[in-house]
Image 1 (cartoon, rainbow, N blue to C red):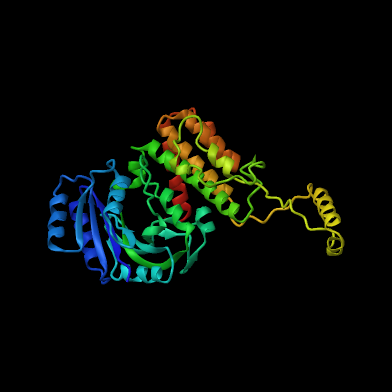
Image 2 (cartoon, rainbow, N blue to C red):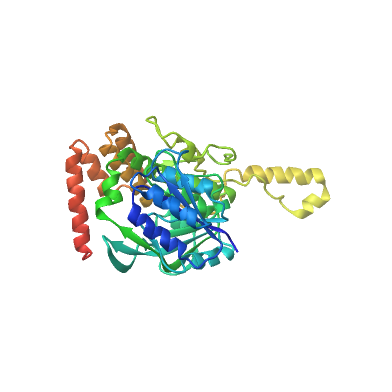
Amino acid sequence: MLKVSIIIPTYNRKELFEAALKSALAQDYENKEIIISDDDSNDGTRELAQNYAAKFDNVKYVLNQTYDRGPNGNKNNGFDHASGDAFVILDDDDLLIEGAISKMAVVLERGYASVWANCYFELDGEPTTKFSGFGLSKSGEISPQDYYDGKITGEFLIMFRRDAIGQRRFEKGLYGSENTLWIYLFDHPAYYLHDAVRIYRFHRSDSVTINSFKRPLCIMKGYAMTAELILQKIAEKNAQTGACDEKIGGRNLNGACGANLDGTRSISDKNLNADGGDADAERKILSYVSDANSQGKNSDANLNAKSSGLEAQNKNSDANLSQKTSAEPKFRVNEAYIAILYKMAAYYAKFGGEYKKMYEYLFKSLKFKFTKEALAMLILSPFPKSMILFLTKIRVWIYKKTRGE
């Protein structure tokens, strides 16, 4: 039986945290531990957590003294102190549904490295039976292409094996942007469970949308890094089969054929600075791989004389140098999705006052796919950010009205 570590990162949400902790303790899965990672709470959360840790042998309280304050550092602190074979992150304002851990652990026992399960959505204390995760409609194996295409959106509960991430952690300096870690889960088999295992509690007064405008440059980097990681992953996976896209986002990338990806610096390790953030990624988008080794003209000639056979082989190879072939790429870039990611990076760059980065990401977005949204943002870019925010709210309101929300 796998040992499962339920990691609860918390900060100054005493009442909500206790409810989350109780839902974890109530799980019927026996071989579990609960790691409470505290970001230095001062509202009584620390004392409450320490009391539970003293009472239950499988509950451990750890203060985040290693990483920078914030959601990502607090989660990383939990990872470092977990001893399980598999991890689950439970936000301190959410609840596990009865039997959640058992249902997910069974899937991992079948050989999957991660299982993504859906959640019920609760808005400002009002429970619903609406799923908070979108893009998948039935249980089954998840294709990496689905993730690279941006089809898996919303909120899921994810259980994953320790070795699926190794020593990787959530990115320092980002606000959320969990995709920069989750993308590595798709280097291994993944499964979707079309069942609700968590109550995702959404509080409009404390929403990511509101808080994101307090950290616009962190959000900007997250969107840009996600786009670059997707491009890198697709390049790496296609290179393994000797295939890749010849042209991506309007950029001819021939000439990168046969590039050695071993030992190269990953996108997540790069510093997204002002002189451009995806030069490495562009070099890694490989183009056609040619077969320079041709067969001999016929086996009879090879049997008659080794020298004449070699001459025939060389002559045939020379004749075919201009007719290069390539394996069909297994994974393709969804240019529309990459364009959206860069457009969102530009949007938050505007609010962070990084106008050079805003134009850089806008032009990248338009290179991948020419959209009216990116063009409109380019046209409106000289206007104050308050106007863009106002227009964004109007667009969201219209969108919800058309959907009957």
